[in-house]
Image 1 (tube, rainbow, N blue to C red):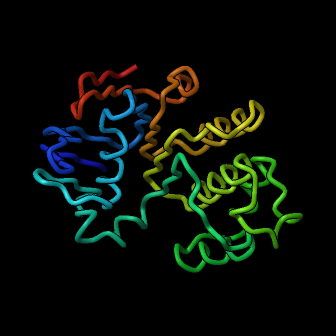
Image 2 (cartoon, one colour):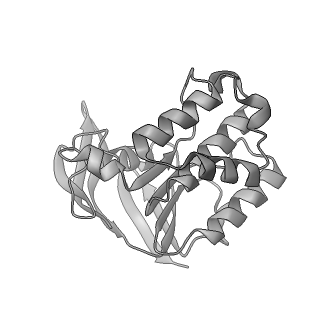
Length: 212
C-alpha cells in the first residue's frame, strides 16, 4: 500500500532522509520511532506529498503522492501532532469535511461521542479556541469516520487524558483490519498493544525494522 524506494530528501546541505527504502502493507500497525531530527516527520510528509524528494520515489497504492495528490489523499487519514489553526466552528468543520472528503457527518458525530467529546454543546465554537484535548478528539473522530485504508497518527495521544487514550485505543482495535496504521511516537509502551511492527530511524536512515 505504501512503497518507499531509495528516498532521499535534503534541506540545503542537511540530509533529512538518506536513501530510505521500506514498505507498509495491509494489516500492519507500525510504530515509527526515533529521536527528534531522525527523519520521521520528513518521511511522513513525503508520503503525504508535501515534499518533493531529491531522489527516489514514494508510491501509495501505486500512485505518486505528488503527481496524483488528491487521489492519494482520498485514501489517507492524517492526524498531526499539533492541531492546525482552523478558524471554522465545529459545525462548519464537519460540513467542510463532509463535502470535501465525502465523509458521513453522522459518522463523525458517532466517533466524537465514542471519544466523549460533546460536539452538540460546542457546535458554534471555533475549533481554534477548543482545548488541546478537544481538538485531538475531533481530529481522531474525523480520521476514523473517513474510513481510509491508510491512517497516520503523529503522537496522537499527546493531548489526551488516560480515559480518552483508552477510548482511542479501543476504537482503533475495532477499525484496524484491512488497513495500514502508522504511529509516529516516542512512547512505544503506549501503542505496544496495537502495533505488530517497530521501525526505528536515526540520522535519516532506517536502523531497525522488526515485527513484534
